[in-house]
Structure formats: C-alpha cells, structure tokens
Image (cartoon, rainbow, N blue to C red; front, side, top):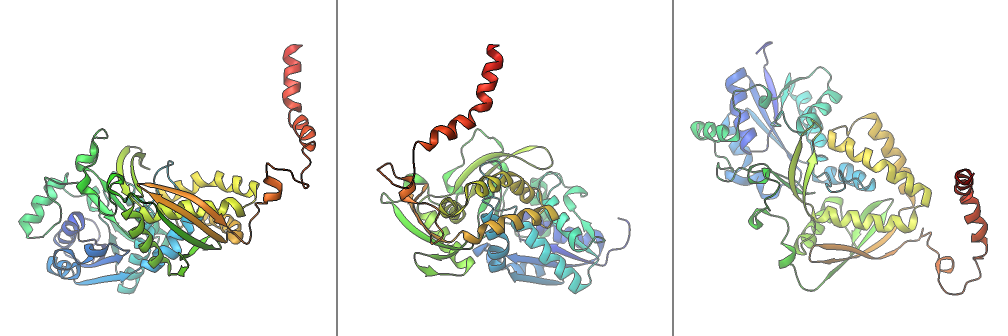
Length: 404
C-alpha cells in the first residue's frame, strides 16, 4: 500500500459503507483509525444501532468525535446557498452537496489536531461525494494523504459489504432486500440506488421519512409567515429563532403538508446520469419565501444578473467547489444584492403545493400608484409610444433590408 500510514481520520456515519471501511482500514493499514461524525441534523440516526460512538469503538476505532454542527451548517452553508436561490438542474436543492464541504472541513480540523497523516471517506468512485470531500481536504491541507476505499478495495457491490459486515459481526441498517442508500441532514434526506435505479418505477410510499404524501396531507391549507433580514430568514410566524431551529420547524410544518418531494434524473459531475429522490420540506418553503421578498425589493437588472449566476453557483456547489475562489466571488456579489432583502413573505401550504400569497417590505420597490390599472397621475401612457419605437428600431431596419 505504499508509504506507512500511522493515523487516519475517517468520516463516519455508522451506515453500511463507513462501518465496513472502519474495520477494513484497520486490517489493511494496521493503523490507528479515528472516527468522526458530524451532527448535521440526522436525528435518531446518530444514536441508531445502540449508539454511534459505541458502535465505532466496538468496530475498532481508537477515538470517536461527534460534533454538533447544526447551527454552523444552516447559518454558514445553507443560508448563503439560499440567498443565491441555488437549484441544480431546476429541481435539486443541493441538500447532500452543501453538507459535504462542512463535514470535510471539520474532519480536516480534527486531522490537524490529532496529527493524522491520512483521511478517509465512504464515497464511491462513481459519485459526486468523492470530489466534494477531496477538493475540501486539499483546500485545507494540500499534502494530506487521502484513502478512498471504494476506488481500491476488493469489494464491488453493497451485497458484498453486507456479507463482510455479517462475517465481522458489524451491525448495519441496510439489507440486501432493501439496499437503497439514504443521506439525511437538517436540510433534506436523499434516496439513491437499489429499487430506484429503474427510473420508470415510482418510489414506494413507505420509503419517505420527512413528509406525508400530498394525498394524505390535511384538507385545510396552512399559512406561514417568514421574516427576512439581509436575505436571511430570522423569524417564523412572528417568533425569532436560530437558523437551525427555524429550519427544523419548517421541516415539521412542510412535511405535514406534503411539501418538498422531488424525483429527478440528474447529471453527475463524473459524467453519468443517476436517479435521486429527495425530501426537502423546509428548504422548499424557504426558497419560495426568499424569492417572494426578493420580488419586491431587488432592482430589475440586479435580479436578472443574479439569476444568470444561479446555474453556475448551483453547479459549483453540486460539483464540490464550495471553497473555490469563483464561488466566493459570486457569493460576494450575491450578498451585496441582499442588503435590501428585508421583509415578510406569507406562504400557503396545501397538499404538496407551496405558494407565495403575500409579501411586504420596508424596502419595497413596488408602487401601486405606478402599477395600477386604474386612473393615475404619475405615469403618462403616451410615453410608451416613443419607448416602443426606439426599441423596435433594429427590427424595423432588418425588415427594410429584407424588403429591399
């Protein structure tokens, strides 16, 4: 395996892949392995199967770090992304993508503290996460040794991992009969693989965890009001909350009303297409609310320029370039626009639909006296004739040339 590796910090979730990886690293490198788990709002998953810490130690970890990063996750990663209105390929709100740079950043901080000479992750060689983790690793330590087991070990399927885990006495939450992979945090939960690999098959209802089906949602609409300051949500229904608390409450409300389910076939960075099913109830609500407040506070040209940056920004997050200079540059421009994004959005949630039905702001550029269809004294409609004739000039010239 090349140079001797003495200490490895593993990004550990307690799931099938990283449970097997922990044991495999110890056996393969004869090295000390430190398990690191980031609490990003996985909920009961952190204490599943008898406890994450106990499970890692029982599997052979010399030490276990479990860090509560929920507030940092929402404040410094999710909120900046929501200020950009980032959506990948018009559908995916980037719940997994945005979590990876924070996990990798915290992992590198532990590696530095522990004097580790290597880090490891459970991402496969076919997916996006390997890029997201490793770009961040190199950002914080250009000389770090990275071990990506899926790219070098003998296992070729999750069935083989399940067999290995059973052989080694490692409890895992995945079975051969129900092998799809899920990733959960405070922003969303994703499902991939297994039965979902056929893009024609509809996901089974018992798979979903954060939301009820729209058919089973309440028959009465639910209204919420979200207050914004500088482009960030700060209060829900008049009550100020911390970023993580606010998002968690919106997840509860949105999930109850069937909000935030997405089923997409997306283009991975490595070049292949993959099918993903996502639940993002709170994020879906915040995206709509932010757009609503922006609609009355942003200048037209600022909004249009900002919207041209959206696909590129989303692509950078999806590909793993969160700490890149280009993402920072775009973020700076976006955050400049957000200084006036103050106000309240009112949304109507009903059976999977999230509609903005009200918006108000002290910085509102909406003027009823200009926009009204009734009689007004501030807008001379005769001015429109010259405006139209000037803008039609190039079209008229083209027509004259064709006629000649």
